[in-house]
Length: 201
Image (cartoon, rainbow, N blue to C red; front, side, top):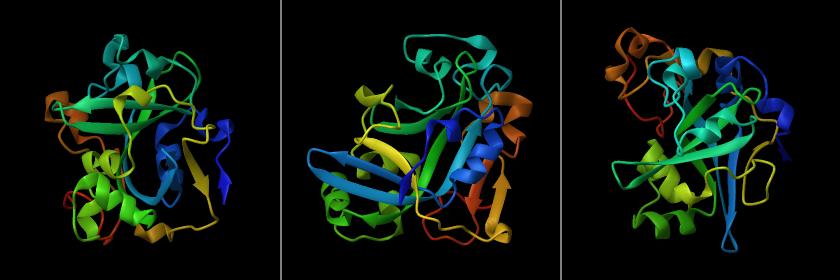
């Protein structure tokens, strides 16, 4: 298993990167505990031109400033005061593209994930949806800005690939405020996978 290099993230097409992330492995090594899961669902956000993006129209705030940095860093924000949402910053410095990781297939450290989430059974809900991803993987908004070249949080390639016909797209979830942009097919997922959140649309 090989950690993805910076060159993976600084490409200019956020949809291509999102597609390439499917099947890759998100790994955290926090407090002496390793957890990992295969990415089975994600959403692309195209920065300034995307009304669903936190950086829409070039908006810069202390929270979103990390999105304008070099690709290959973590953007983790707090949603509804409880969910820590893990995003991958992509593209060159100054272009605020990001990809939200929406679901994983748990691989390593499942007992740790159960402890973190308070769940008793390692069913598909353990890492289904971005809030559960953050909780199970031990991610927190204070980690925003972490390099994905670090040993604490990174994404790796073990050579596994999903067949092309299993990769599907749909509009993103929960972005109705974005007007016409809410219909963009920027959600990518593995068809039929139990851990995928939301229903096909």
